[in-house]
Each structure stands twice: as C-alpha cells, then as structure tokens.
Image (tube, rainbow, N blue to C red; front, top):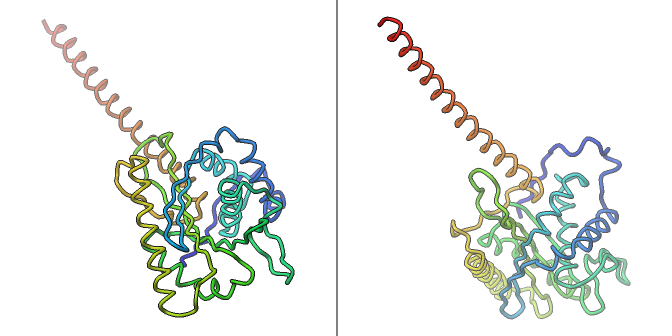
Length: 278
C-alpha cells in the first residue's frame, strides 16, 4: 500500500508537547464529533455488499469541520494519526460506539482497534488510493486477515477520495469521501482461489460504490480522485491553492481595471489637448 508522510507547518502557538496523539487524540476527536451532533446527524453513508465484503462511503460537513479542527491540534503529517481519526469516525458513525471500544487488549495481550460486545475490528488506512487499488490492498493484508480469525471478526481497509479540485472558491458541498472496505474474516481460506475471489469482489464493489455516490451527489466531473497525501494535509493544500487562484483572478481583474482607467485618462488628456489647440 502506498504510504506518504510529509512535513507541513502547524499552529505555532502549540508546541510539539501540546499536539494531540494517542489516547488524547482519540478522546478529542470523539468529543468533537459528539459536540457537533447536528452535523453528525447529517453524515451521508452509502454502501454496497456481497457476501463477506461490504464497501462503505461516508461524507458530510462534520468530517470537513473535523479536518479544520485537527489541523491545529495534531501532527497532521503523520499517517498514524489519520488511522486514529478514521478509527473514531467509523466507530462513532457506523457502530455508535465510544472511545472505550478503541485500542483495547484481548486476553492474549493483543491490541484490537475496535472491540464491541459482539465484534472486533482491525483498521488499516493508506494514501493515494482509489477503487482500482483495492485489490492490491486486499492482497497486501490477506494473509494477516486469515491468520487473525481467532481474534478479529473483520478488517476495515480505508482510504480517502475527493471531488476534483474546484476552480476558484471552494464550495460548500462535501469534498471528501471516507471509504471503508470491510471484510469479514470468518470463512477466509489461505488459498489462491479465496484470495482472488476476495480481492476481485472488493475491487468490484469499490468501483460500484464510487459510481453510486457520484450519481447520488451529482458530481459534475463524473469521477472522484485519490487523496494523494494525508487527508488533512490535502485539504489544507487544496484550500491554499483555491485561495491563490482567487487572489490571481482578483489581481487580473484589478490589472484590467487599471488598464481601462489608464486608457480613459489618455482619451481625456487627448481631448483636452485638442480642445486647447482649438
């Protein structure tokens, strides 16, 4: 799976010691989501499934607002923090759980990402991924999924996609999609036939779901693009680029206005000169 970690500036008012991580991050993300219930209630969830595979897409302004909040409170260039954000969002939105369900150790001392009274889930996430990469993701983790059957019920393989970058101002529509490929491990066999079937089904459903949300959300361009960096970094860069485009467009308009005024001044000066000659 492609993974990228980059450096980007964060709020200088917060030292590295003050930036959130670990349990503090999990708790803060949960508190943010639960503190924005009106937004959270409008999370749009679409899904398709076939047998042991289910693919889910979530988007809403609560997730967008969470990115704005986290940009000042976490080391946003760290992929592990994106993992924890996905962990909390999925737990709260899809399972109705709280932070007590996260990163608990089982009787054998193994840490489980999500543990509820009836299921245990492992979460993996990456960057620069789209539906066509899902077969590769499944292939990468297939052996681990089979080996984890005694301790984990399902795996969430997650990635972000988004609408193509808008020209000019960023609109108020939801730009980002959190995609989760959920695979139930019970019944998986460590053989090529099962591997091929699982990755083929996962990729087919991921492609089907993308077409579904494009139609549901009336995405004008007709396609979504992979988020090539850690989700929050990508959002900040897109907003920066949009601001630069807006500034450039304003400068062009001002330059054109100045040119018109300059031409007007020349015309007036020429008229005055002619009238003076007469």
